[in-house]
Image (cartoon, rainbow, N blue to C red):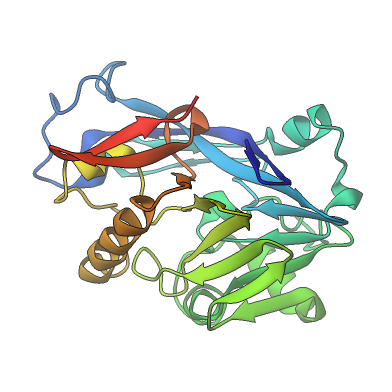
Length: 267
């Protein structure tokens, strides 16, 4: 994807094996077979995005890391492929200047620090929502020990965000709470074009047709609903495309209005 003069590359770290129940106890096993098409499960990516802007090489989300985690309802997260994907783009860990974490769930921070708590991206500044630090690092939110250790030991690298702000030329972090207290979306803009990297504020485009489908991991369901509606409205604007961290095949789309709203995959 190219937004004006900014290059944007999706990179998958692994797979999120999701069940219909992830979106709510009211979602049946036969819901949307085009999504849950393999033994009643959806095999969704664990998405990250590489953005090049001027002399900055920005990674949006740091994947699951080289580990697996079993979830309720037989679901699973399996990571480990991010560095391979970056290498395919000609990028090493030392090239990354900034990492923006849309939020601090396990499948978005896994490559930040190794098991000793040492930064995997040795030159990178780490940006994230301040509300998530309070919830995950200082509070009771689930965070694996070596990631918490890295956050506590490398405070000089950390840039908590409590308001919308520019991170790099053409790259803005926008507060979108609900899924987590400090959830961010990343807006990439150049000229008249914009791309919204939605993180988990929208789990899957099917939520456009199913507004009662939530994420099992939403901290504040009502706030997440309001945030998602605001993002749908933003995606209706001309020249705006978007993608979430778990959108099938990490494909960008735009929201078209006609007889209702329709999600349209961009070429």
